[in-house]
Amino acid sequence: MMLRTKSLLFLALLAIVPLARLSAAEPTDTAAQIAAMEKIADLALVPPTLNTSPLPEYGYDKLDYGMTIGIERTPGGRLWACWVAGGDSPKAFFVLATSDDDGETWSPPRLVVDSHSPDLPEPRSILVGNLWTDPTGKLWLFFDQSMDMFDGRAGVWAAVCENPDADAPTWSAPRRLWHGVMLNKPTVLSTGEWLLPISLDQRPGFRKFKGCFAELDPLRGANVLVSTDQGANWTRRGCVQFPKPDWHEHMLVERKNGSLWMLARTGNGMMQSTSTDAGKTWTEPTFPAISQPVARFHVRRVASGRILLVKHGEKIDAHEGRSQLTAWLSSDEGETWQGGLMLDERKGVSYPDGFQAPDGMLYISYDRNRSTDGEILLARFTEADILAGELKNPRSRLRMLISRPLAGR
Image (spheres, rainbow, N blue to C red):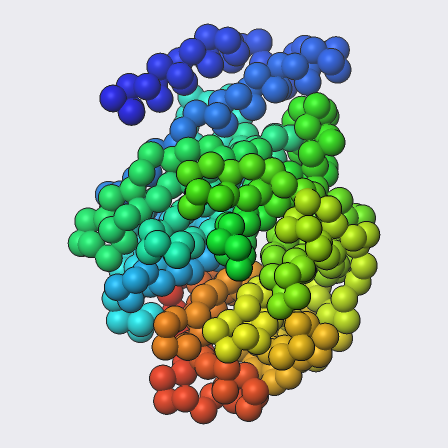
């Protein structure tokens, strides 16, 4: 029934948007062209299909790119990793694999979300998102869907798995939560509310979609959505508009005084903002005493009460681009940082994401040389390792391989 509904919606949209009329050559009038491209963007509202039997079409021998998205642990101890194949481009789609031995070995691709079709007038991409195990034990897969890389609106979707440790996990049908994209995990507040960081890009549409959905301009920025019913419903609560925005990729930490600390990616590097009313209003953005290139970072509170930060650079206030991926800890709510465990000193490493297991072990996934080596890698370590600046725990390991594309090799 779901497939039939999707097909009917797809055909209905195509009827509204005749492909012959929406070529790049016409219409020439700017307002009419924007209206035409907005109709094409409606094709991103069609729910994508979760491919739970992706082999052999999506085997490693068919893949040639790797950009990490996220990693998570289920209640039964299974690890799920997600990454982008196709490219950091309109060709992007998601691939997921699992490990049942604490990250030592990984399955072939076992879930793919690829919404491309030769029948579409423009590429339809699935570019960013994350994995998250909620407090009830359900595994969430968040992803964006957009025509091109960003059609001026895009949209964050979620599918939920209630049996992620099963031999044949089952997923809910994807549902669209809001506009925009997200790349970092939700934060659970002390009140029990769930906060979801969603970026509605302050740049209104790329390439042919430039200028689309101008009515969304007041909502553009690093948004915070909230759920008070364990993810059944999400409501926009507040937003920060950063100068020289660059995807935002913002993350949230609840401080011990109840305020919220937001860190975000901008074209000027990392910036910060604070909210004292649960995310409704935010302070004017400023620069923290953390130096970071224009790239994703990872910040979360860990079980000890400290804040974990994974960034580029062997010093908190310095970096040498996308190299020297290092883990730090703060015991004073981000004012100062201790440790400095080098996870990977090589060039071309980026996009850390992670979690902490019930036993305290920390897990960080990242990628290396996306379009050449395409490696998705894993670091497993402890807070004591960070403070010592070297691996002390016998279970700790660095540069563990999650996946590597093999097409053309």
